[in-house]
Image (cartoon, rainbow over the protein chains, first blue to last red):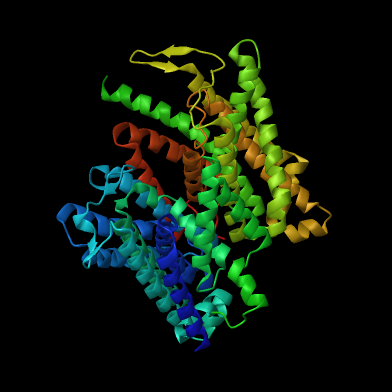
Length: 310
Length: 292
């Protein structure tokens, strides 16, 4: 009960923040929330189940193009587009998982990386349809989501907050369920959980597919909310970012990805005002985190202050 | 130009890329074999080698060959020293935990790439070839330097083999590869072997870069493609097997040359990456590796 109240309070705080923030920061918040949905899903696989994937850009891009292509090519509505993106992310993740989960550890990372790279190259290869690096710009009509105009700042932030809230509560429910405990068991000791009668392959496949649903809806939402889908989002950088957000906020914490996404977003925002080489910040953050703070911000808080944090 | 000469050209181009590929991949394979870690920053070391070559070649007076030779000496030393530093200051503290090392080397990759962007700038710059010799075949002219690259790569690889098989340092590396704890028990300074191996792998990437810059150009993102291809080569050849890596480099370089000559380079890369993923899934020890 305490846990649920705490997270509802966080959501209320976010809503208040959304109302009072000036336009520039409100727009940033919308982006951070969409990236946080992506990272929350990534963290379910990485932080809770111990699957370090380097292929989530593929699921993100599947959601992005799963929504953007039907909307721009066939004039599909934005809401069905969002649903299509969600399903595309989950389906691609399940398909990749079927093959990639035959491996583990370093091999799993490389296999997922390779699948994602093949996906990125495919987007480039079919640049007649996907627009390649130029990308697709979604027009105003395709961005009317359930009667809300995504070209307006207010409704856009509202939808972003709604999607994040849904993602957060679903993740919370998942990690607190019995299945959530099995996920942790997989991370801690796969062999022992196999001995107890759980099938690691099925559990991990299910988690990867769920994680893909998150990536898919985040990608679709990102395309519809900000009106653009491009090959850059399929690149390896977008596999690394959710990992970075999770590591920074705290791998294996529900709210960690949001904190990490926010912190990293503003770090890069400030850095890009100073230099064109703003990705330097990403590199330094990765090295420093993995060396000195492998538990991340919220992991540290949980250790010292709030031991009941999921 | 008929099909025959066209194919010949494709094969020659393929041989050149196979040579460069073998050099980059052999460093990656060495590091994986001995240290059991994947160095994602390998492509960044390659890029850094090219950058140092550009810098050195620009500061040595006289004909281009002097600048190039100086680069061939300086670049591996600089890059190797930096790699040793990364090993001692980062990887060692992570206790060579495979997944942590990958995350950390991704970070190193970004740091090096962005540092190059800040100092060197976003433009591609050429480095003069040490000599210009044109081989006139009946159908087309071909750069003599490219063929020299193939010969030079063979020489370097032979050197690596000699180092591994015939020297004390090679023996130490092989001992550490087989069993790091036993090696330590026998008084081998495993930390130093690791730092040396990591430096050697990066230095090999730098040598490849010095050889390749007169053909391509220096650019701060030039490490991405070689990294991917080197990954593919090492995996198809069997992680950690040097002989498999060489065979795979030959196969991949040639087929890449031929496929990208007749079809699209992007398509050839898609096929190669998918192939790697499938090889890893269904034959984790690689095509030539021994069963683990």
